[in-house]
Image (cartoon, rainbow, N blue to C red):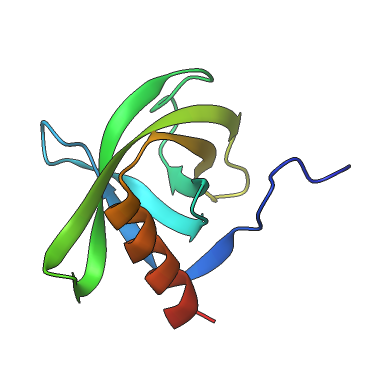
Length: 112
């Protein structure tokens, strides 16, 4: 299968909590990221393909005076969990500021 994304995603170690902006509920963990999107794990039926939401990502430490970053993202694929592994979701960022992209690039370099 041909890779469809323009830039590769990079593993996050440790994975970062993904938080719902209104409730503060932890939705899952971001396990890889690029300036264009991310993959997260979580329980089933959190997102449907095509659904767009605002989410927060808790940073492992303050970066550029921020404890978290926020953006809007569209769910572009889902994969059911198997054998005790959680459900996976792929997102494309749809509304993200240049400052947040800079923080994501910094996270990528820290994890290489």
